[in-house]
Length: 356
Image (tube, rainbow, N blue to C red):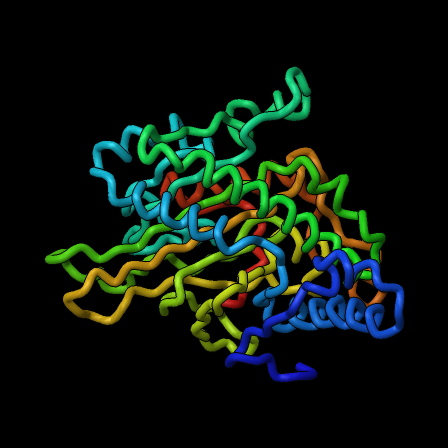
C-alpha cells in the first residue's frame, strides 16, 4: 500500500472536480491536476481496499432524507402487509424479503448455520421501450415489474427519484473507473448502460424481548457483491465490516454527506483482480435493551445481462494471464442471487476464494 487510507482503512475521495460543472469544464492546469488526482486515487483504493467513501457526488440531501423517511415508514408496517409484497419467485429481484429469508454466505458457496437477520425491499428499472427484445428477454426475472406497496403513498415517488439519482451517479463512477483503468471514458457505457440495476433497502432492528442471535449468526453474512460496483448509503452506526488486506475485519462507518462505493465481482473479473471485490458483512449490535436500528440502501450497478465479461487488455500480460473464464453477466448474477434465496450454495465463480 503506497499510502495509509484515512479513517482507519477506507479513504474518502472528493468527486467534485468531475461532478461540479464549473470544475469539470475548467481547462486550467490546477483543475486538470485535480481531476487526474481523483482518477489516480480511485485506482489506488480499488487496488488495495476495494472500498472507498465518495463526497462531492451532487446528490441532494433532501432527496436522500425523503427516501429514508419513506423507507422507515414502510418497514414499520405490520408484517402481514409487507409479506403481501413478496416476489413470485426467487428469480425475481423485486419486492420484500422478510427477516431470516436469506443467507448471503451461500453466494460464496458456503452453508451458514443460520439465516441472516435483515429485512429488505428491492426495486429496479421501472419502465423500458415497449417491445425492446433486450428487455423483453428478461421481463420475467431481471426486468420484472416493481412491486409497490400501497402505503406509505409517498414511497414510490421517493424511491424512484433516488433510483434515478443513483443511476446517474453510477454512470459517473463507471466513467471514472474506465479512466482509472486506462480505457476510454465511455468504455463501460455499452456494457452497463442498460443493466438490471437494483436498489435494495435493508432494515435491521432488534425487537424488544427478541432472543439474541444464534452462534455465528450475522445481520448479513460475509459476501462479495455481484456486479460492477455498489453505491451504499447507511446510517452512521456500527455494523458494516470489511475484510482488510491484512486479513482482519475492519469496521466501516459512513461519514455525513458521503456514500460508500465498493468493487463488485464482475469488475474484479474484468480487471483480473487488479481491483478487489472485498468480502464484507454486517455484525449484530452488542447485547442491550434498545432497538438497535440500522438502515442501509445499496444501489447495485450491474452489467448488461447479455454482456460477456472477460479480462481487460490493460489488466493482463504474459506474466499475469487472465485468471477467470469469460462469463455472461446475467448468468453470473442469477446464480449469485439464487444461492442465498434458495439456501443452496451458489455455483457462480467466486472472487473470494482463499480470502475467508
